[in-house]
Length: 430
Length: 179
Image (cartoon, rainbow over all chains, first blue to last red; front, side):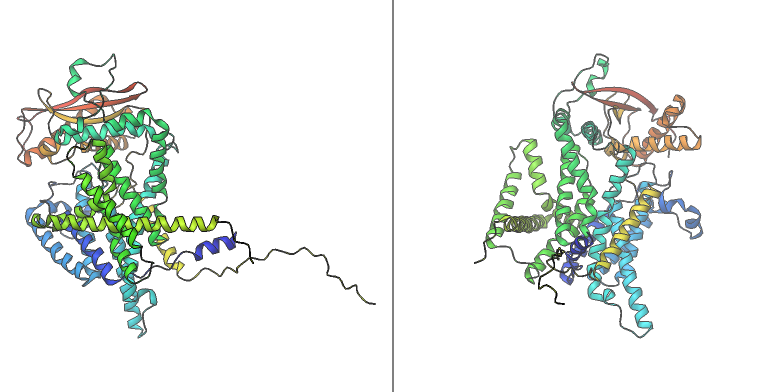
């Protein structure tokens, strides 16, 4: 048993060395997300009725002469945006990262604490704050080790060498993002008393709810398509004007209980195993691809979107720049030309089909899931990409999707070869 | 005396095909990352809804009970676009009410939300609705004379989905205090 465990542990590769170009791409993309977060108007919350997190320490803030609700002040917001702009330039350039990252982390935590202190907690931004905290800790740990070494006129430990910092930032960003999912699994098991999987088919009713909420946000009639509601004898006819059709997918999942439980079970398993993403680039890739598809599917089914989760997965888990760097340096075997061609044809077909105007909502939804990585990259870049450069943004999304498809094909092909070689009958020795 | 020249019949222990070396030093990097993840998980599950931590309770307990959601209408019952009007999404109506109800339960040492007196429930709902009206006014949104808060209940049964509705609160926008 111990030998088997040792064997498994030894198969875990060393933490890969992230090159400066790959790290630059990751920083550019994260900076684009942060710029998008801070590019809106001032927060519309002049007070903090239900303080959470840092907002609970009101006496501390008062003693510092600050109040988190001041982010709603247009002048403070303007200053904040100026600070963020300068800090983001430094962050992208890789200058003064141990100072730039804490500033970005604190400002992001600050504004989202204000939003979550309104009595309606939102769960879309924790992942970004945690990634920034992870990067902050890595940068300070490495800087502290180098400083201590310098004070002792010694060379810094190998792990704190500047060339390793990008690797730790990559690994700990993945760790911080991944762990949010097992936390959700633990909560599901706690509040459902272990019956989440057994009762998961009832999530279908939540699909109706989120579609209704989506409709009442904007009164978008496209969210009212579907099958008619059943009519209970006790229903008040005066309320018929609110009895809209039910989304087809919700009706279908209700009628196929076992399949619904299987589908939700796959998502549950993916969430539970998310922590394995730190083990290798392949683990990160497949888990990240799984989450991008999961979130896009949830968006399609439930009109419930977690864009930051998808984008963080695209940057650090899918990490197209990292794969290209590994292929170029021959760190990994390059995919065959036929694999690239097949991936390009498939991506082109998916892009072309998604532009067709006469598609059914189901086909549109499935295509949206298929090109989810491309959509994620284009969405990340859209706040920093002027409208005139929209075709370039689309092209970058296409390239990203092609790389991801190629890597996925390569992974599947090598897994297939590995399996067939294992089960091939051995040739008797001559 | 001469011993018989025979190999004793001792059963042989199987030997491993390869000798497995001890885990390499690089695993420390993963161990510390795993420890970091464990720390975030422990903090999230302990301190719960305290940004940037959360225990992510959404959709945590699917069950056969009806699912509720809330929406706003004008005085004649015509639906209003919540996001355009208030700058908030419709789910936040329910979240704000739940936060206030849980606070009441905690402050008054009640068993759960079902123990809250009906008049307090109405008061909480009216207060939340007034908060949204204040927010809409501060955004410069054009408001109808009356805004109503409605609850929709989705029932998932074998024969299909059905929905029932109740009006929960109403606020006269002309009479409510300015922000």
